[in-house]
Length: 466
Image (tube, rainbow, N blue to C red; front, side, top):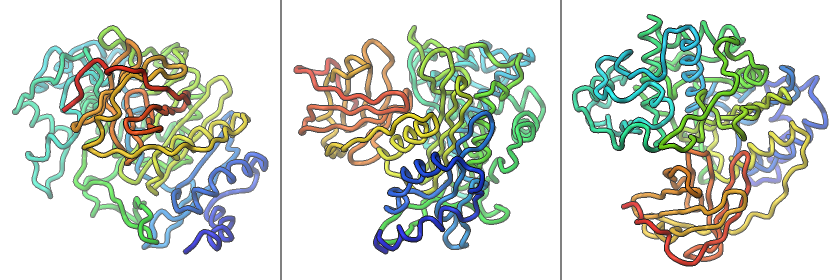
């Protein structure tokens, strides 16, 4: 199908299953204009909810949650929230800390005695500075393909294998999913409750998040129609599914609707996500090797240390989600998608939605032609770039990956998510390069930064990763 007839059908598809009455008409027209080209290009299906003072000003679903079953996407459609689960694990630890039942500065072994590294603290698990195997591939040889993986089972593997920390805990940043799974297991051990029960009682029921839940480990046990992930290829939607046999919680595997994520964002904007006694006056960013972490202790990215404007995202295969909140304006933005939205369009869409709700002008741009790289050409990105509002950005590229460091700050891994775009999960940066190979220009975009830098002459000053 070409884009011309699809555009004719868009208004009806947008309204399917969604309450459009009572919305702010000017805001709706602006948001619709942002999303129309993405829907027409088969790049976006999902849902968006915008709220102020806890009142929904815009809510719409787009496209299909499950094509084979004919289920349309609405704002109440639960979808894989990926890493947004981390904000709940961090909030749970903060709540139990206020109750005196958890001490983030205590060793992990206080709560998980079988944990093999007594020098590592619970707070270092949450701060992504623990040195554990950061990704689940480490566990693949230890489980049969049809064997359910629980956090306790993975912890037994770590206790048996005793992998040495990749670095001294607290000395560097490395994004860690397993660290958050262990934090959720610590919550279970302290409370004597299954983690999902804890979340239901403390957060989901209290905040009216009626469509939020932990997925079953075996996808075959799913009750009802499951939201699937897709990508548009060869004039059709191809399924890009999540992984089966996953029973670990904390870092992922929670399902949320856009409506529920808006409730979570609104609660954080209003300061009611946690009881007052459990809500830090200013959620701090922990120090890693003497430098501030880009993520605060409640697992939010914020534009300043005052914790007024914050957000977090989740991405897994075709799924992407966002919760943004502004405590000063008491606003919240929630986005969920199941359509493999292109990387650069992802961050642009997020910023456009936040700007629309805040009434700021849309930032128009003519995207440059980004250079393409593969494993063999990644070393060409190496260099030092002088970036507006950032300063010197040192990039080291090699066949084994890419690492970046801004000034004298922390160094982060950058993952190539398309031929043209790299994602840096530490500070939540999206990078692309232009003007030749080796490139003369780097483009850096995040929720709060939109900058361009030019390459300095001379070497980057450190070896490339192998």
